Length: 348
Image 1 (tube, one colour):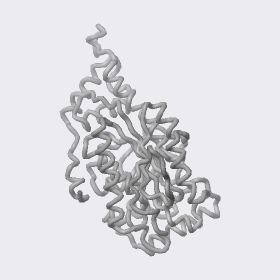
Image 2 (image 1 turned 90 degrees about the vertical axis):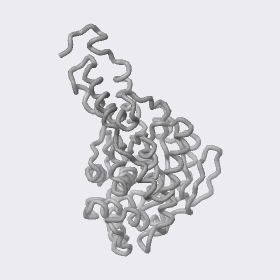
Image 3 (image 1 turned 120 degrees about the horizontal axis):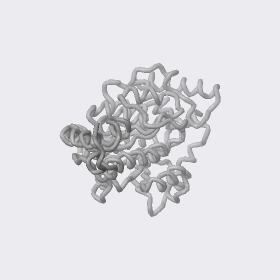
Image 4 (image 1 turned 45 degrees about the horizontal axis):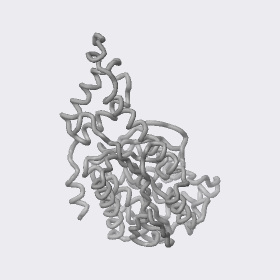
């Protein structure tokens, strides 16, 4: 399937379902609008699914994992080998995202889309496009065809999970060094200065931060990514797991499922998805505002406002998994809360 065919399958939200949901919310035993963003999320979910009160019980955090050749430039506090080790941790249920997903009643689906190691596990979804990207400070991170292949991986996995009954998705990722390509993508797609887009990632010091900024500047100068062509940006200064998440977002939107966006890397993917298919932004639920520099600007570039702010900067899908609980609360409000009529209370 081509990117054009994927985009063509994304329709507008169901305005009639949203109006029904809003009318129902106003009949609940509370002042109209007094539950704020929860009411907005409930109406958004209705518009996405076409159901006034949808059932989104089966939830999945899709964790895309890939390595980055730019790690050779010393942009991360951790060695690239940690990517494969953390994938094993996800698969064994020991990572933070596993804990939060269990708390939210969700499953973690871990996808090897570009890990530069051989990871074997019965629960691993192995869809390796290539063994890590090339060093974007010396040339394109990957070819346009590889970026498209990675998008297709994410798109197809959502389709498979929808066929299994999943209806609510979250974006997660693992890839040592991946704040560097995410920062480069943000700088190009949002027209930001590199110093505003590049943050500390895994906790690098001031000297390494300046070095990281210089690497991003070099990558942009060498590759000259075209801001009007998001696929070109993904290929030249992006990452395999980032492109995979673009596919997850487009796939969820095409199948009328909400997708909860996690932190900085996930939002860089969401920004690329929104530039490819502006209508996909209506299917996104932003989870949190991370401490990573550039995240607020990335959300603003899409037109999204975060649900929570907990000073998170881990990634993995942790904030999105926590946000599942808020989405569930919004739907339970609609389903279980008494109306003025059923409670025998005179309405306003």
